[in-house]
Length: 241
Image (cartoon, rainbow, N blue to C red; front, side, top):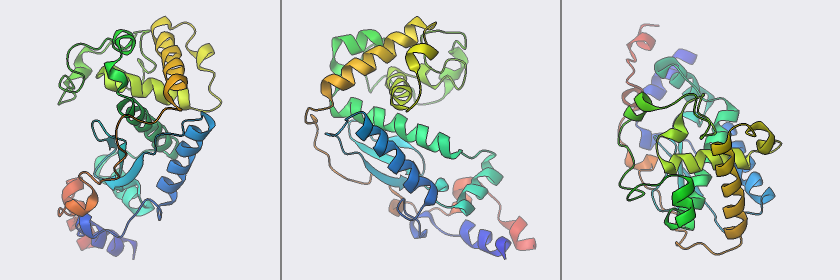
């Protein structure tokens, strides 16, 4: 039964899950779409390495991008919704991957060292050492700001200049989105979008400044915790059925 299959999945350690990006209908198609976006914008020199982990992210200073294992199958997505009360739509998965490619592009060319980048994205101090360790930033965001592409949605661009660039890049990379028109009344956000457009066109044909080493930092094989432990789930509900 479905309950038995979900119970078995909950009791499985992450490093024993038989999942992969290639076998995932959602993730394989989302990665293919994002790569097509890169090709459309002639971003050909960086080759992000995608792999599964406990969440979405780009390893600092690399082009290695991890994707959340909880989006790998329909059953895992259902359990994520059941126990964490949210699940990404397909479009949100694609947008998140575009965001991570933005990080990878920034790291590949060390854009954060450029004076104009630091000025446009208001970088203060060491780019990586100033990244907030918690989500406390949410208490100080300005939902009415016109300086960020997503000020009124999830405020993520206001977390740190690293995410501000990645969110702006994600918008810029989205096909059939007329960002010049949509953000025409948001001068701060529009300036960032124009800068992303300028800097990507300038660097996209250059070889990256870092080696593309496909390593799995904190990949699934390193996690012995069960799916239930990850979701903070009690499998007893399924045992009773």
